[in-house]
Length: 418
Ligand code: HAM
Image (spheres, rainbow, N blue to C red):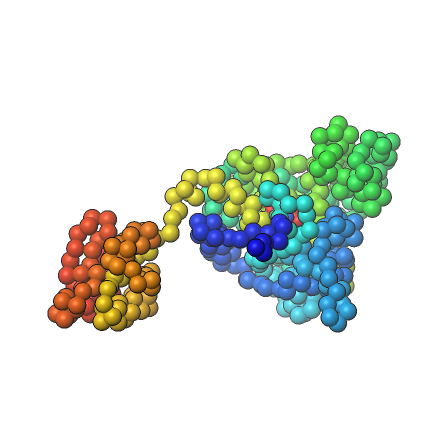
């Protein structure tokens, strides 16, 4: 038998109900916050990710799905959504209008990772990118939107871990201090960190292998190397978050694994989650737009992993309570009754009633069973005798009460009883 590729998932049954629920909440919240849906390609030219996510990032070094297409072009399946949105913004000259662009997306991403719980090769993110405003009110909006979506999904005990990398000057000063601090301890770090020391020393701070080492715990903090502007900017973001009543903790170890960030960076976790997996993260990336398009602009965004959210929701009572159900099951036996069933089912469906009928030539007993399996609220039981009088038999499947109803009134009857 052919099986699915390693690190991928099939979404079926109750899991797919949960996915639809998550997607519905996300779309509704995005609408409330006035974010526009954007859809960019699943693959892009490889250079886009090398120049944005960064040559030195784990994603580009080890995790991208690269291929050469039939035209001999180097292509990459997108490992994340930000680069594609920024490319689209630049390519379509969306900067020509002066307003701030607020986009959201929801789609599959690809990273060649070692599969484990919450870490897949094909996974789905929803996320936002806001391009064109450097106002701290947007940093606070983006962080609170991420928080409020997870809250609306009934994920409790949320905590935002927030930090700032500051502007270029602050970041360079910090990098120097960090390098000077780490150099004497280099031999005590893992092989990956020795490599990171040369290519991107900041990344050493969020190394998973060395995360408990005293060396990293005592490392200099970005916050102590901020210039006045960066410090004031960060304090404003925190002030706005206080006003919005977002639970956050300033965590100097948050530096994020992608190269494009400056100023605000953040990740969100649920303290109820035993795996303590990061549900989402993001940050500001003002210099990325300049790097990719030579345009002075500003950007900030976040992305949340839906697979991780689903893993968490599955442990909650909500999952136990969701079940497939339909409004109505139409039952028949003879060919004559079947013609009426077909017509009634179509009328009900076109009027927004979720309904089903037999398609396996089952007898009435089998159809009753099927209606129960589908958790049908009402049963419409057809028989030739009633039909000749223009009537159908409708049974409330919970109270078991039955009523004869005029065939032309079926839709109104069901809708008024739902
Ligand atoms: P990221 O931290 O790489 O950021 O990913 C965001 C979220 O995607 C993670 O917190 C996690 O929930 C989910 N995720 C990442 N990798 C996997 C995986 N292999 N399997 C399952 N879930 C995964 C970004 O992608 C940035 N583009 C976020 C951003 C938007 N920054 C600014 N704008």
